[in-house]
Amino acid sequence: MTDIKAVIFDMDGVIIDTEPLLAKYWQQAAREFGFPMEYEHALQLRSCSEKYASPYLKKTFGESFDYRTVRARRKELMNEDIEKNGIVKKKGIDEALDYLDSTDLIKAVATATDLERAEKYLKLIGLYRRFDVICCGSMVKNGKPDPDIYFLAAEKIGVPPDCCIAVEDSPNGIKSAYSAGMHPVMIPDLTQPDEELSKLLFKKLSSLSELPDILY
Image (cartoon, rainbow, N blue to C red; front, side, top):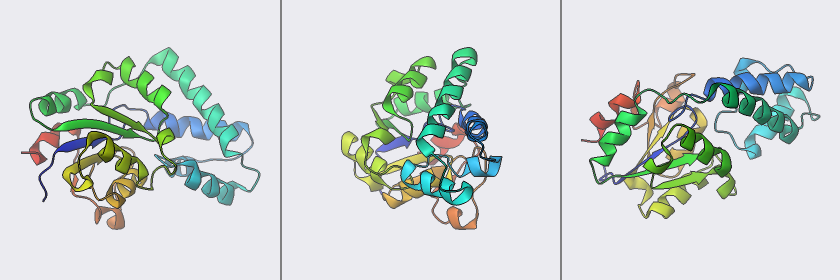
């Protein structure tokens, strides 16, 4: 394997434990507008850009599904929850970043979340200044599962994609990192990888605490 020079983290489901909230409030928002979204539908939206999410939802629930309106309501509901209850860090993230600080490896974030909320969330958990670069879905034309955000991250940190490990929890994120030519490491959150997705993985870990083991 090419020498690794950077580790790029997805945010939701990897750094912060927000994927259950995303699934919960996608369902609630959709149902408020009369669409019977189930948990399985919400799972398909993890790290998924509008380019892919909107057609999927229209195909599933009909052409009247207004992605932007429902998504705006989902964001309202989620923000209310976070304002009330805060955000929980994923287990092992502090230790993983402490280890990376002891190396020469660059640390970056590549998230589908917009920059304003990404900065807010990372500041809430005290990790905003732990990363060298933060790249968000709003910065690229095509979000995950397209590779654009990982290409952008590689460009910003000045490291070739094949010298980067990308830490993801969802299929769409893994596909994005793999398509960019990075080494995808999956730490499953809500679902395990199927046989097809497993072929794209460099490694599968059970938690962030195992990350240093693959970087020696």
